Amino acid sequence: MKIKQKEKEALLARLGARVRALRLEADLTVSAFAECASLSPRFINQLEAGTGNISVARLAQVAAALGRALPELLPPPETDHGLRAEVWRSLTGCDDGDLHELRQWLAERNGRPALPRYIALIGILNAGKSTIGPLLARQLKTDFVELDHEIEEAAGMPLADLFATHGEGYYRTLEHEALARLFTTSRGGVLAPGGSVVTDPESWNLVKQRCFTIWLHATPDELMKRTKRKGNPRLLSRPSVMTDLKSLLARREPLYAESQLTIKTTGKTPAKIAQEILNAIHSRQREPGTAKWRSPCS
Image (cartoon, rainbow, N blue to C red; front, side, top):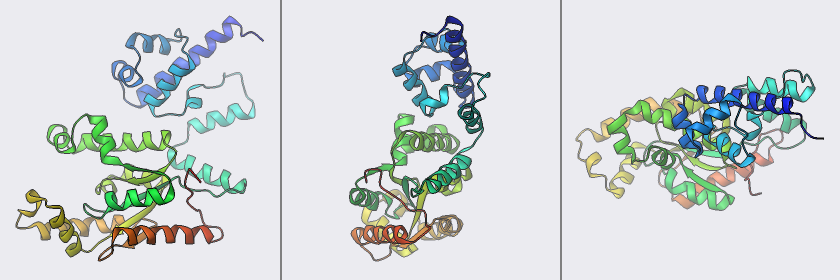
């Protein structure tokens, strides 16, 4: 059946209004949004006005630029009061925590394990996230994502330059955007956020909602040994480096302890630590009624 002209115009108007609302929610100007979506500002203006008849491929670019799934951009008509239309409207008002709980409930109701798609390795600098993460990802046949690399790509500069030029606030914004983008577009994997992610409540809550969190615990002496092995002259030249490290750990350890699993890493090889994590995951999978983690490739 051929779509009527009025129905087509109404569809484009709904799509345009939805895209504009999501763009404003993301605090993006038309120019910045157009650049992210690889489209022209003129076309974005037409789209939001309801006059741009966009292709599915371009609409996918728009969704990716907004960090949204494609179906989120197509609201049902206001005259549609069917069950699926009403559910769509309910879902648009949900935050990530609500959606996570709903996904868990649906999975359990349908007899499938309600699994976080991600394992997040949590810990301070030199806790071993960048070393153990790739080992674990290879064993699970999934991807390893180092969040700071994603932030550097988004900023177009190294972290040191980012902090020097824009400050911590800008880093926090990019950190949260990178997490939201990852959880929307990626199939899952092993994630290594920065050691300070726990100090930002918004990002830390998002990680806890979407990931199976593992704290890589190490003593201050062990962390200092690793720092010396890696040879960080700027850090090691500070006379108060050990005092500063202990103070930082004292502030962060209660937050790190909110992780679902703690693995003590002092005196252990990366291979042994990775194996302990795998054993813990497999043990949880055998526990009845426990939410389990499953590799997206399994």
